Image (tube, rainbow, N blue to C red; front, side):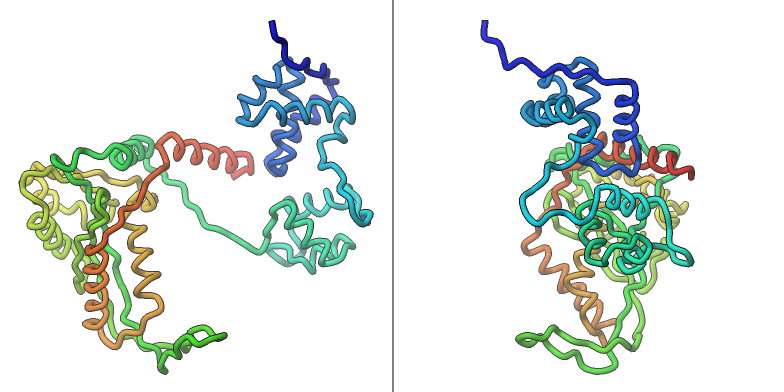
Length: 364
């Protein structure tokens, strides 16, 4: 019988176990430290290197490395090994103090730390703060937005829509269209001509502009082909939505069922719109959860047309704006490219659950 390399015996004291659990579960621990602590805890519980490696989806060699380093150096062995070069002038304690202060405290009369304010508070140089923040992935100057859906049927709706994306019906029997409106698109004209791109100099435009009116783009993205049915209207009431639905009805072959992915905007649920759908049983509606427009793939297409055609252009009238949108639609449909949805419902719901856990731990 062939035996593998015997694992080094690892026994944890109560104090070490408590410290490791704190390092692994502390919300503001960096990922490397938390991972190493969890590996040592699992090894200390009696699991083999292979079992721990399978649990954390790493190699057995990685597990063996941290097992042996902990046995040799205990808690001090979980840090990064020293590298050749100029001797360090900043201690681990100073680094930990900077990281902890960055994550858990705020400067007086300010919302976030800058490298200068942190350098002054810690007694280190600004360059040292830059290096510490970069090493631990800390970016106090950045902020991102999020919003959790409060829809009571959030899970069911996510599974329904993601199921359509990952396992769409056969194209010979049905079509899946993501439908929405991009409202209030402004026809903006710069106060002076745009200066074109030149070697060594980017395109330049004035910061001020003239408004020449707005339009609303109604669009339906075929998730299988990437083609888009689109039309501009001056307003985005249920009357315009009904006219757009009639355009879809005339475009989609009569023998196909139509699955529409929609958000919860009021114009999609008026009595006249509901009656229109009731008279046409081939339409199947799939509403996204509230505050979850990111589930609708046509939103990604709206971002694409904004970035490629609208944001950096100048339009002297609404007609000129709508002409540009129609031309973009025609070009898109000549060589369409569908978006590839890869996230499963379980992956999405897992991330939402993790975010909810972080919010609960923060006391909100």
